[in-house]
Image (cartoon, rainbow, N blue to C red; front, side, top):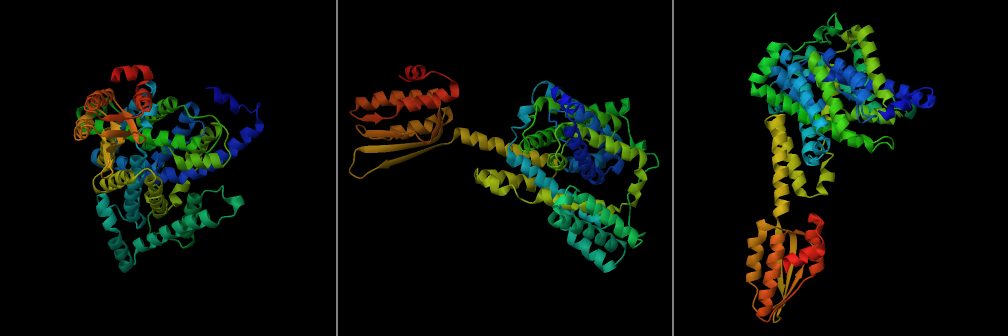
Length: 520
């Protein structure tokens, strides 16, 4: 790991100083998010913090993306919540363990780049759908209630929950007011904080405001974070019985595959985004995937939340001036120090405050900011994005993502098989112009042959191939043979054979001479 040498204090004290300060900022960002994601996942807050510790102290050392910070992510919260609900927290560790093993194997087989090939429309749709689900579920928690059921039920039930809290005027309304104050503090700090203080993360400010309000007004009636006396007592080790149960139930295996896939895609896309933020060491994707696999296998062995590379923490790391992986490692050390010495402070945090942080996070994820970018690549991308979001909210995360992937494959198949043929002829003229647009492959050969056969004998045909992306050997051979037949009727075919040969050559790496010979 050549980049680890850069964290030697004797070599560059200023770099170590920047990493040290950046690690403090990342720790302050990570702490409320670790707890909030755990809450949204149906697990105790300590579970999220332990995952953050592993993400810093273990994955931070071996990662392939030095400035990326790993920890529990909102992108997996909905899936984990469903798994915990269906199979109980005691089975989560086993599922995450095997998800980590799958990631490690994928990294070892150098499949990291393949995860980056997932359509951005599906990834953005997945994140937006997750945002809607988190927003809808945590809004009820912000009112000291519980999620009603499915994503649609939670979303539709928000107005009724607000009206019930207002009409009752009890602790639910008080909790909602604390949550609203928390969100207002986050927005205000993000928008109006002095530049010199912006390194203090807005979610932390929101939590501190919520804690202060609860203490100032002595709000004993609302719910607070429940922390066990022994911080590490929430650890649940996989047992032989649980491993046996895992292999006997395909639903558990599907859950592990889903966690591995989503965590890998989110991590590697996050790594790509982080690379665009700085000019330092570039990401080694297969190494990063293997490192995430090791991290998730350890999280599974301890029965805590799975992890991914997280853009909020990673972005804060880069913006705070981090130069090497030391900042990510130290942020894990600060989480460990906090968990060892100050866990009792969590009992002063209202649940509605943590839920409010997640409501705001869900809103940010759900906001369709990706749509203008996707529109540049055509309406089909926006359609895939929208369908993915709707399917995730209406059914579940896995079905939504699989639907998006299926639509992406259909679009690719359509693009590879689309051939538009436009024919123009001036009245009274013997000249006919054919415009080819798309890909001329074996799948579209009947259509091309049909169009050629309808051309009058003896006509002067000019074929325009500027918009043609590719032609395969079968269609190239068809054009050549038809040219000979048409000339025998006294007609002519004008086409840039050299350019047409290049359309084949660019895909197959064949010399132009070979292509022309094949077509002759």
